[in-house]
Image (cartoon, rainbow, N blue to C red; front, side):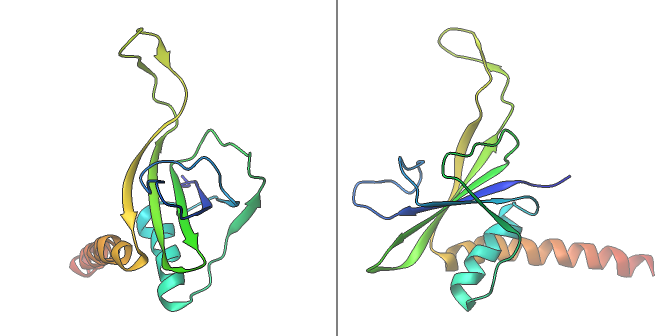
Amino acid sequence: MSTRAQVRFATREDGVSFSEHPEKIHAQFYVNSDGYPEGLGLSIAMSYADQEMISGWEIEDLDTKHGDLEYIYYIWQHPNKHPAYISIFEVDSFPHKPCKTCGAFITKPESKCIFVGKPNKLIAKYGSQLDESYYKLNADDEERD
């Protein structure tokens, strides 16, 4: 199963929190697979750190919505502030839980911010998890030989 995500570009502005969805974005891309932080998140961070190219992004209109997203990424940029900041939101596309106030079932996707930081912080956080997962997978293979 694919891990779908959207990558959105927003301007860093005073008074706008990186841990909240901004009111306006300037570009949006859809990523059909590997949208989890250890995949797409690291690709975005490595692109900043090492100028690595990223492939597999589809350009979208700014108002395009998806009902099957698992992550939304924001890349916060400003001409005189470097490097960019990255925010990652985990999306619950099918919450189906009752509203605490009225009891009606919530059917609108919800999201929570799971990461805010500069590219090097993202690499430090999720790169080590990827290394551990890779090691565990390879260790399992070696034990079977």
